Amino acid sequence: MTTTTPTAAAAAPAAGRGPRRGPIRRVIAGSLLTGAVLAALLPLVVFAGAPEPVITGSALLGFAVGWAVLAVLSARTTDQPQRWAWVPAAVLGTTGLGLLVAVPDDRVLTAAGWAWPPLLLALAGWTVLRVRRSLAAGSGRRLLHPVVALMAAAAVGGAIETVGLAADQRAHAMPGQLHDVGGHRLHLDCTGSGGPTVVLQSGLGGFSASWARIAPAVAGTTRVCAYDRAGQGWSEDAAGSQDGLAAAADLHALLARAGESGPYVLVGHSIGGDHAMTYAARYPEQVAGMVLLDATSPYRSAGTGETHSGPPSAVAVLPSLTRLGIGRLLPTSFWTALPEPAAGRLQAFASSPRGARNTVAESATLPTLLTQAQALSTLGSRPLVVVTAAEHAADPDWAAAHHRMAALSTDSSHRTADATHAGLLDEEHGAQLSARAIGDVVQAARTGTPLAPH
Image 1 (cartoon, one colour):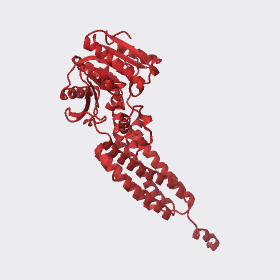
Image 2 (cartoon, one colour):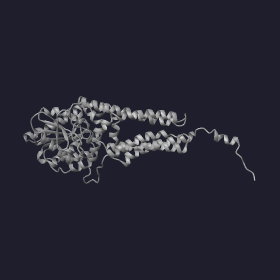
Image 3 (tube, helix red, strand yellow):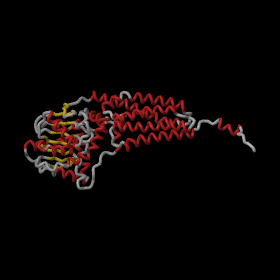
Image 4 (cartoon, one colour):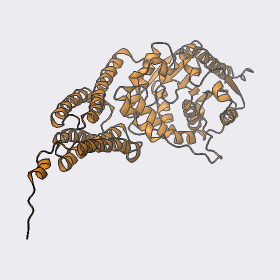
C-alpha cells in the first residue's frame, strides 16, 4: 500500500492565498442590488399609496436588508468579513420599523429633521472609515462609495429642507384668519365689500395664494374670500381623508363661523370646480351663481365605461422625496408665474413635504369627488360661466364636458380663454379673463338680470 503526501509546492498556494477579490466584489454588488430593489419594491408595491412615514420606513427597511446581507454573506463566503455592515443595518432597520409602527405626523417628522441629518452624515463618515479599514484596495470599495455619497447627500438635503421650512414659516405671514370648523381650523382670507360674496376654490396643489392676481381685481366690486381646504396652505390637517362632501361641510361651517353671509358666487379652478359643484349640490340655497375655470370633468366615467382611478403609487413617494429637499432644487418659475410675494408662498407650500402630502391625499380622493360633483343636476336660472382654457378647447371630451357643465343653468355662458390651464390664475392675461367672468356673474346675480352676451 502506498500513501501520497502533499508536497510543499502543492500546499503553497493554500498557505499564500490572498484576499478572494472576486467573491467579495460579487457579495458587495449583490447586497447593494438587494437593498436597492427592496427599497423601491416596498414603497412602490407592498406599501403603495401609504402615508409618508410608512413609505419612508419601508424604504429604510429595504436598505437595512441590503447592509445585513453584506454582513452575513461576506462573513460566510469570503475571507474579508464586513461585520461593520451590521451597524448601518441596525440603524436604518430600527428607524424604519419605528416609522412603520408609530406613523408620526408632519410636525413630528419636521421636528425630527433637526436630528436625523447630522446623525446620518455621521453614519456616512463612519462607514467610509470602516470601508477603508475592512476592504483591501481593489476589493469592491468603489462599489460602496456611491452609496455612502448618497447617504451624505440625503443628510445634507434633509438639513437644508428643515432649515428652509423654518425660514418659510417666518417669511410668509398668514393673511386672514383661522376658524375652528370642528376638530381642525381652516384659513379664510376675505377682502372687499358688497354682495354677493365670491368664494374662491383652488385646484390640486394650489391654495389661497393662487388667487393673488384675481382676488384684488374682484375685491374692487364685491367681497371675495379665498380659503384653504384642510391640509392646504395655512389650514390645519383634518383627522382623516376628506372627500368632496367633507370639504363642502368644512367650507359651510367656515363661512358661518367667519360671519360671511350667503348666498355666494362659487368660483372653482380645476378640481376646485368639482368642489364648487359638490357644494352647490349639498347647499343649493347658498349659491347665487358659479364660475368654473377650466374645471376637471366629473362626467368622464358617466355612461362611458371609463373609470377614475386613484393616484399612481409613484406619487405617494413625493412627500418622502421633498423631505430630502428635492423640491428646493426647482426655481420659482417651475411652480408658478404669480408675482411676489404670492409666488414665494406658493413655492414654499408646493415644494414642501406637507404640500406633496396634500397633493397625494387629494389625488386619492379625486375619484370620489368627481362622482359627488355629478350630483349637481341643475342650477336653475342662476348665472353660470364656464371657461375653457385654449389648450383644452381642441379636446373633444373636455369640450363636451364643459358644454354639459354650461347646460346646468338656463343662464349660462361657455367661453374659451386664450390662456393655459394654470395661466387662468397665475398669468396676467389669463387672470384678467377669469376676473371678468367672475365680475359678469356677480353683476348678473346682484341685479337679477341675465348674463350679457359674450
